[in-house]
Image (cartoon, rainbow, N blue to C red; front, top):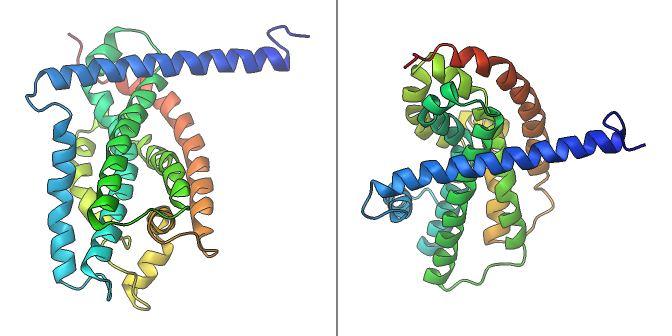
Amino acid sequence: MNGPGSFIGRVTAWWNRMRSLIEIGRLLFLRDYRARVRQTFLGSAWLVGQVLLSFLPLVLVGGQLGLGAGKGPRLYALHSIFGLLLWQMFWDGLYSPQWVARRLRGLLSEVPFPHEAVLVAGCTYALFNASIYVLIMVAAYASIGMVPPASAVLGLLAAPFIIMAGVAVGVFFVPVSFVYLDIRYGLPLIAPMLMWTAPILYDSPASGPLHWLNQINPLTYLIMAPRQWLTTGWQLDELGFPVAILVAGALLLVGLRFYRYSMPRALECLPRR
């Protein structure tokens, strides 16, 4: 049987809904992106400039302070830049959905369309940014004359999962940000502090409070394994990454239920034109 109540019918309905969400999310991304680009002279170059200007001082200072634990300057630069770019993928996944939702709040309150499309638009932003970060990684390989290891393919394949982990956290903030602007103002302040809780610019110490903080921090496993794949190769002790992804997937399922329940109520708090 292929009726609406059959298994095939339900799968077909789900697939059609996903295609619709992806298409609406893509259009929302293009609408917002083009509006932003029209108001700038440098366009997408701002993205590369912001990343480099934010990260290069940290890399240079970290190398001078000996955060590389004996790594040479070039190896430490590659190690830290890749860690920062992977961290930025996670943060883009966390931050972009609520940022897009705030920019589209007028449209959300006036035009009926699936609210999940806002999440798709945020994910599209994060994936677009990730493509720029991959180009920066390629430039980093070339700048030090390094050939990527074979496991670099795994590192690239890990990028969407890192973004997904960020979305799993960020989905909770989207509805709340419509009610409390503290979320919008507070998240950029939290980002640097959260970044330092994981061994991104430094090697995890062998003992002490920072060691234990690194051990219990899921970001440690989300960043370290893909960075190893991109720089030094596959190691058997990197099973923390799939575990962290499974936990993020479970959190995303919970977050989506919260999102569907709370978004209509959050939109009621928006001022009417």
